[in-house]
Image (cartoon, rainbow, N blue to C red):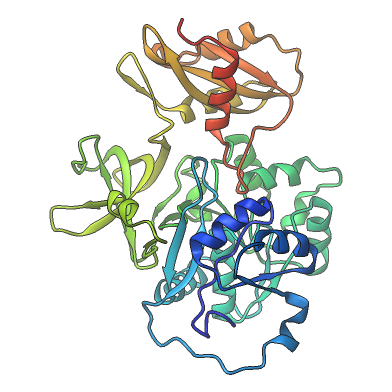
Length: 430
C-alpha cells in the first residue's frame, strides 16, 4: 500500500479531539487523511481550513486509479508513530523501512511466528506495540484479526472461534480479562505467544497468568523509539521481576546523573541502541540532540528516561522513570518499590505513587490507591505500608479511590494528572 508506494504512514488515535488531530496533521504535513466511515465527522472537522485531502476507506478501491512511485531506499521514512506518552504533546518517532524490516524479522523469530499463526489485535493500531505484533505477521504471511476496539466478551468469542496464537495484551487488559464473568484459564489455550508491555504488571496478576499459561507469556520492555529487551517464558518463571536481556542487534548501557557510564552490575538511567530504533523525532532537531548520549568509543545511544538495574547476568530490572523519581532528604525513592508494597495489601487493587513538595525533605511520597471499598481507613493504610517500607520511603499521605487512574492508551498511569490533582487540593508545604 502506501508504504511500498513511498508514502509515510502516520496513524492517529481516534480518541483525540478534532483540534488535536489537526495539530498532528499539521505537524506531520499530511497530504491525505484516510479514515474509516465511523470517523467521518472527526476527519472532516480536523481538516477544516486545511489543504489535506480526506479519503474514506470504503472508497479507496474506486478512488485511486493511478500509478504511484515506489521507494527504493532502505533509509527512507516508513512511518511516524506519535507517542502516547504520559507527559507533554505527542512526539512523532520516525522509523525507516530498514528498521521496520529488521523489527519484523527479529519479532518473527523471537515470538514464534509461523505462516499458520493467527494474530488477534487487541490494542490500537496507532501504537507501536500493535506494530510489533503485526509486522512479523506480514513478514511470515500469518493471519491478522483486526478488531474495532478491545471488548472482553468479544475477546472471549474470538479466542473460542479463531483460536489466536499471538496477541499483544497490556496489563490493564489482562486484569479486565481475568476479572470478567465467564473467564476460564482455558481461554489462553490456543496462544503460543502473549506479549505484554506498556506498564508494569502487578506481581499477583503475573503469577496468575504464569500459572495458567506458563509457556506463552513474553514481557517486552522498550519505547516506541527503541525496543530493547524481552524476557521469555522459561526465564519469567525464575526472574519474575525482570524484563529480560537485550534483544538481538540491541545494546544497553546505564549512565549516572553525571552522564558517566555505570560499571555493571549497577543501576542508572538506561540508554539503548538497536538496528530497529527510530531515526529521530519528526521535525524536532533540538530534541533529537538532547536524547543522544555517546560512549567513550563515540557510539550514539538513546536516552530512555527509564531507571534500571542490570544484574551480573545481563538481566534488566526496571526501577521507574527519571521524571518520577522522588528525592527525599537527598535519597532516591523509586515509586515502583512503594507501589509493589501497596499492591500486597488485601484491599488494594492498584497503586500509583507520586512525589510532592515538602518543606523539610524536599519531596515526599504520596500514594493514590484503588481499593475494593472506599471505606478503608487512610491512616490504617499508611501505617500498614510504612511498617513495610524503609524509613526514607515512608508515605506522608494517601488518596483512596474506587475508580481507575487516568491512563494513556497502553495503560500507563498519567502521574502528572495525579500530581496536579493532589496539589490543587492540598497544601504540601508541611
